[in-house]
Length: 350
Ligand code: APR
Image 1 (cartoon, rainbow, N blue to C red):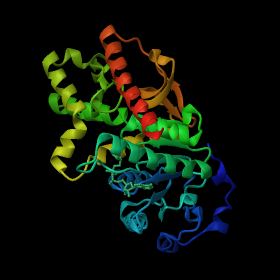
Image 2 (cartoon, rainbow, N blue to C red):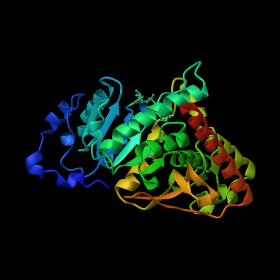
Image 3 (cartoon, rainbow, N blue to C red):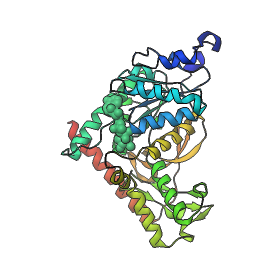
Image 4 (cartoon, rainbow, N blue to C red):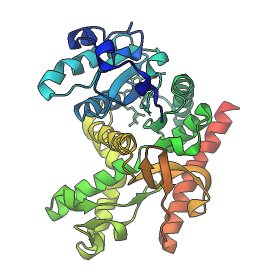
């Protein structure tokens, strides 16, 4: 992890009055010196859209790190950063949030980079068009930030998630343990929310276990999903479990159908921040993440959702569990879908 912060001058030499710091949160912000004096960590969020700005808010409100928001849009990251700074006195946090347009140097020495940059599918756009566009964005963004934050852990959020992890891994040149995708935490949070609603219990009592790619090919494992330690297979009929699994698989689409003009962002932002917190605090927390497998689960050189122990080193361990034949078949189907996207990307870039 970057130790850059510890080389900063002591508090009394680098003190900036908070008002000045907020006022300087503009596109011309020239360095990360605007960091607050009490945060030891720095997180850069690329893409100041719905997911990115919400993640920045949660990171700051939890005082996990100073936050830099970067986007290509003129004024938007600076405006959202300033708005968040103006909420700070009410929300009672002292994190600094700055915004910058297209200036990757602001990401210098970040401990974590969360990448949410991308475009949603527009009418008339083919799946290949979307894939090609988001590949290009992910490649450019990753190269930009990897050059200035060579010790960072990357948390990829942009879709199609597993494919975008491959792009970020190749473009960054980072070791496998420092490139992770946010998918399983979101999918399992959705599953947990539905289990809690169904059984009328606290969400805090729920745990859910999800493997595989993000979305349609996700592989929920009900026998490892529990309420107060009791497997849900003992609490619900197979039909109800299947209904909740199906709703979880379509969780993203259900929200798009309601919002009409965009996709989910509160839960995706929470999920990315839970991963960031585990890494920043070196918690050794096991969370379902997209990670590059190296023979685990019989899969090689492919990003796919598996339980990962997260700590200061990023993905510190991939947890392998014994699967039934049906579960193995589902995971392999999901891996085939991700492999298909990786092949599509090779075709599009050749
Ligand atoms: N560099 C920086 N930012 C970029 C770039 C780029 N090269 N290209 C696009 N962006 C920005 C857009 O300007 C926009 O502000 O990425 C932001 C994306 O924000 P939204 O369109 O609001 O999308 P959001 O809902 O935040 O989702 C972001 O996360 O969950 C996934 O599927 C979702 O891939 C999508 C991503």
